[in-house]
Figure 1 (tube, rainbow, N blue to C red):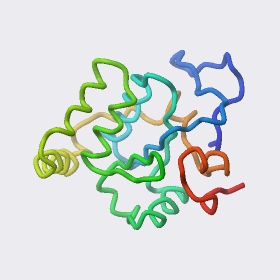
Figure 2: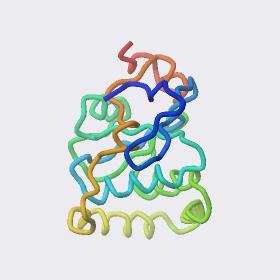
Figure 3: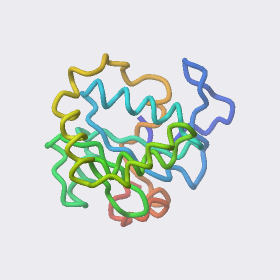
Amino acid sequence: MNSAPSTTTDSTTAKGHDTPPADPNWPGQLVVFDGDCPLCRRAVHAILAHEAQPITGLVTLQSSLGHQLGAHFGEDADDLDSMWLIRDGALHRDSDGLWRTAQSLKAPWSAAAGLRWLPVPLRDGAYQLVGRYRKQLATDPGMKGDVQSRLLTSLTRAQCERLSLPATLADT
């Protein structure tokens, strides 16, 4: 597992998808998810498959980095009750993280950003209902290909700067 994406420009994963570019602007956002949850893994595969541009870095809640990020934002990574989106120095969880993640997707998937217009209690209630049964709702796609290539175990100072996070979260 890397703290940065592959540096080769022509490398592809087993499914033929390009790896993220070795770019100082990568990642533009982090999705922090339950690495043991089949629905969460499936959602991460979908995010990467439908991104408008490869800007998403991945972190599991169970990882040391997931715990560091949780502590920084005052969240308990051991709760495993929500996917988190970290962008522009802020953590967005539950339905806020969902619609904000949709903003980075290609059409028609980006239309899910329209969820922001629904009342928060309705959005979060639906999100939490799905979350309660998340381990039964999907088959496990594993963490191969694009997911594996985007999985981060640490952040560099440049990545912290790009994400508007304090340099104290950087490993190097």
